[in-house]
Image (cartoon, rainbow, N blue to C red; front, top):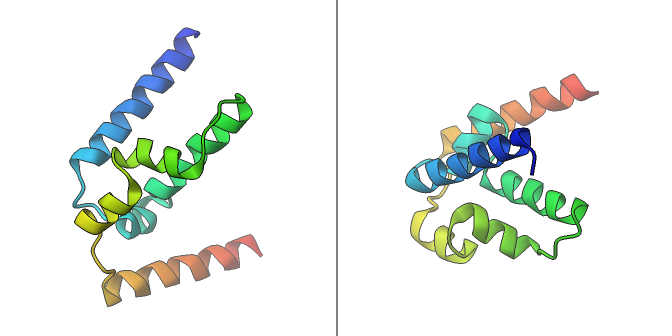
Length: 101
C-alpha cells in the first residue's frame, strides 16, 4: 500500500470509530447536515470491495461501518425520525432535485 492509501485508510478507520462513538447521531441527521450517512458509507465500502474483487455483501459492509450487525444497531440506537427531521430532509431532497434537473 502506498503512503497516500495508508493515510486515507487511517482516516476512514477514524471516521468509522468516531461514528461508532456517536451512536446518538442519527443517519437522517448526517444526511441533512453532510449529505451522506452510515448506509452511504456501507455502499461506498461495498463498491470499493467490488472494484478490488474482494468478496463482500451489503450486510457485511454495513456491519463493518456500524461495528455490529445492522439489525442490532437499528434496534438499540435508531430512533424514529421527527417531523422536523423529515421536513428538513424532504426540503433538502427537493432542492437537490431542482439543482440536478
